[in-house]
Image 1 (cartoon, helix red, strand yellow):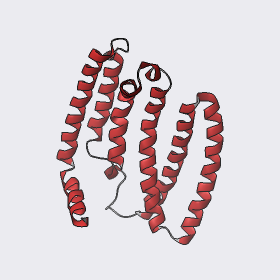
Image 2 (cartoon, one colour):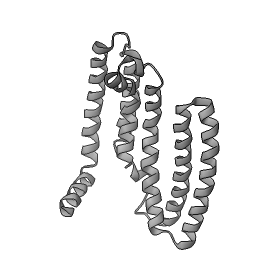
Image 3 (spheres, helix red, strand yellow):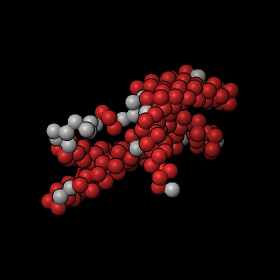
Length: 199
């Protein structure tokens, strides 16, 4: 889940404008749609992480821990309502995504505290191990593609500059894919074997 979210977050913001421009034209890409899509790229990773962490917590928690979890979810829901009202008034559609992202982040932190306590004293689990080992190259790719969007992409001369910007992103994606595959090869093979076995 982290891998999919990190990849989406690494390349999504740099190509949000281009995607809207390709699909819907200049009218929509120059408005709020591309900005909202940028923020949504962050929302994807917190959704993925929240779903996975809460699923684990609910699978292994005792009855009393589940009751505490439900109480905390009620508190987070109230916080979410307040954040939605405030941030939508301040930032419109972007505020809605920001409010939901903050709500998901609070829930992730709650689940993370539970998971840390659950694995206390165990050397078989670490939060660092949840991230793909090539996350640094993805972070670098994100910086490179953001620079490319700001320096290379020209909204008035879109097509020629888009092709250069797209080529930069494709090169970064290929390098990132190779590095992650090379470092995560055993994990990828486990997933393939698991899928073949389930068929």
